[in-house]
Image (cartoon, rainbow, N blue to C red; front, side, top):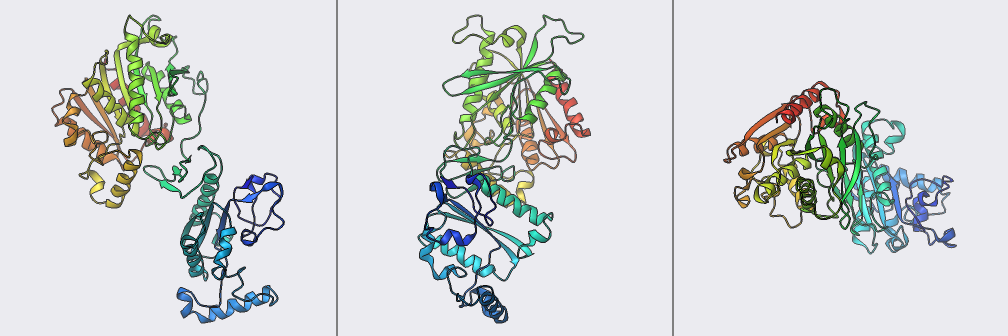
Length: 507
């Protein structure tokens, strides 16, 4: 049994997976060993106290500080230990590091701290010596030692706390398979601290992880019923279907509904069609637009690199289209699609990464025989790429570089930002975007969204590509990426919803 993290003196915690301990314990040989086979795996060191006889870094210019701390150490230990004792100067005993926590160390440092150079030297020593774990250093500029104790609600203190919580979560068993650990790779586009992957391959997700079961929506009063359907048992591909109340005034009970195939967002790496915000949004969309919705839950990167998400989405779309045939092959047909779906009125809809997927599905449908017409393609804050900068990318080169690194992380076999999967208008795409199987296209962007420029670029590029359908653009003023999920009641969200409804109702 491994103790997951060490942070503070023993607290009497009842769960040994969360046992906290002092730094000193990590260096000792632990004789006798910890009970029940426990072992310290991870350590968190917050603005820690190290010192030594020989000055390090800027200590050369601060001899009075050096003398003062040497006297303080002599006082607190009663003169029993010198200033180079490994308990206060681990740089003098690097061999002991092999006995330290076996997996990870997180050290926090503050800018106005006498121990800055000591902590930095210790971190570098861990990296260069034969300790086989992984070390992270988190720096808070402009603050003094243990600033978070005096002002725990400050912005900087809360950021440092978030880092500690994130580190602890990485060491646990949430969101990933197995107990392996390694260097974390933070993927932050377009979400902060959304995912980490370790050398072992274990993945931890921090965003869009809350899921809710399919149900009948009584809370919002839409009366929409949802259910989950397995499409491919071997790959685990499934979809959540949303059926509005059949007791809608003005609609014949035997009339069939347009079918919306909706692809959720999440940068191809997080999210699910079962996430609460998606469930709530699709309940409202099904009720307001009076449509039958099929939302596939495609596999996520990095465990399943792109184009796995696109392949799953295409399989789901073909499954939907297969219900239009009178000769059924394979598993039993889905009753909702057979009884209530009008497959002559299919719409492809996606938000963020889902917008990218929706476009690629329309493109595949144009190249292959889908068997049903696509009446409309609706892209909300779509996620596309491109080697040539668009919008703010021209001035924010650092963000563009991070974005390209993230794209290569999602799709290791990619050609880069001009891969047709991300850039449908690249030379490598060969003009396939102009042949999308959609009669109309609506592109929705948000003024403060970092993807705004890329969405507008898609709109202009599609108009100039030779595409013969109708292309429209809608912009939400003063709002950011996918704002309508987090604040569905705001004015711009209502305007956006009205525009979406007009698009879906235009048959």
